[in-house]
Image (cartoon, rainbow, N blue to C red):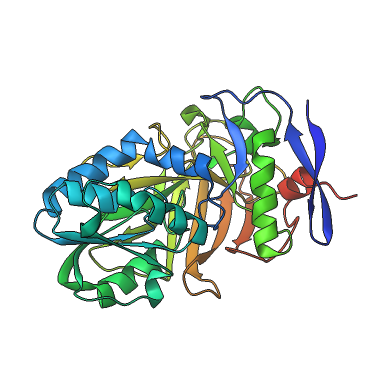
Length: 367
């Protein structure tokens, strides 16, 4: 069963399909992707600060790299998490930068309660516009999205390496990759309607309020069943934060279908390495605040069987804010009957089309 509810933003009244059932902790749920927008609230901060899969890896990297060094924490949040952890790990001092004003003021109120507040300098603003001296030796930044680059990690950390770190300075995390596999959206939400979780409505409203109008938000799928994938996963976006870090990239890969089913899009998820040789965090198979992102390709599901191939091209380039990327996805599905099925998705950080694909027309019914 699906309900239609309404959200109001200036100049618009939007209908939204909603799953009225209770959202259970480990069940699949559909949300907008929220991490790339300045709409953080206590709930979102708590999901990050209590993410032990993430936190264990960042703490281990800080234990290796922080002692006797100067730390830069970009996106420190209201809890000054990695600046605080860096100092506790033995850093000489830390510079903590926060761009969201409300989070900055909460961080400023929290700073005097920390064990060594005199060793942390808190700054408000965009890291790409801030200067300080002396430069840092290690940058720790949790600006990684469920799509690895979605929160601006490539532009932010490329700038930090150039202007804010000493030559040879290191970045935590070391590497991030977005993987993609062929799926059908309804298989990711088994036994329930394809509709937004009711708790997601305030975040949809906040994103549209921030932008000033509705657009096709990226679709975040929480707790999807891994056995819904119809192909193996392959990297479609790679960010080497201590290597050749590019703000513009284009990847083409072939996804071989491994089981019979229906395909209408691609599921993407994050792999993250805080140190070069560790086992990566896998957002599809581990419990973490990063979720998977579903990207639609075909308006109608296409039957597939083992041996079919989805040729996928995934491109990223900076949006007009010069920080957050726009994504483009195109695919050609080659099926055993000799047919080719083509699909395309433009997924800008903000703006662009509204109701461009069948799934968006269904989730946001007109009238």
